[in-house]
Image 1 (cartoon, one colour):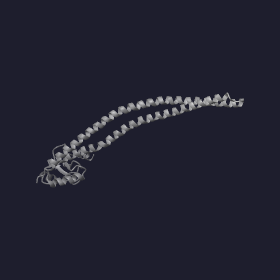
Image 2 (cartoon, helix red, strand yellow):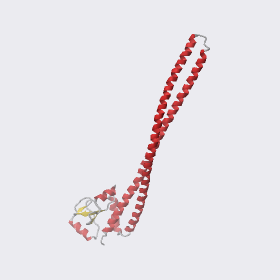
Image 3 (tube, helix red, strand yellow):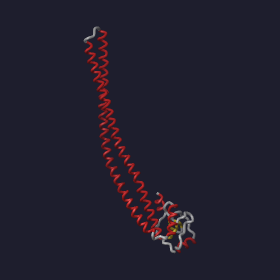
Image 4 (spheres, one colour):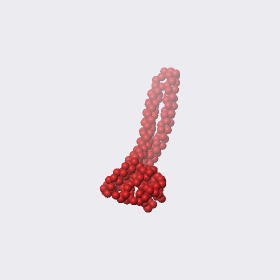
Length: 249
């Protein structure tokens, strides 16, 4: 039986195209997950800035509450001054009032610092929100593009699969069995063209006797070095090392 190399070459081309489309499709979920992580990171930056502002406001309320308590204590001490019976007690109350006033001065300075810090944090929040909005727009567009690519890859795989099934019915069963075995064993490339008497993939010189047998096209002959099915072609773009590398990727 004469070997129909054209069908085998077409089959290999389909298998390589299917593999490449599947690799593309398989990689999309990881890319989508990476985008989701970036979107989440933007949200986390906003949340962190808002949490910082909440902590600042809490600290400010605590300081203001303490100022209120100290003022109440000063008022109490001043009312007690009118009731003291000697200078020692009066001086003691006066010292407590002075200490409390210094405490208030320190607390009010801290409150001012918290207010200034709050202004900076609010700027940080606005910047984080702005960046989040811009990044999310770009990232969502990237996700949409990936979803489109996934749909296209799935459609391509289905279309190529249908072509492959139709072609399989036209290939001799024995030849197909050998092809499939080598295809699985050799990283997705079962055929290799002969170029200038060399195997295009492993560059092994082909013996003249094998070349003559190949010209007869009555049996499949494999390369003595790489084990792939050899065929003769005048097509300079016949499957070669580039296809092998693509199939492995």
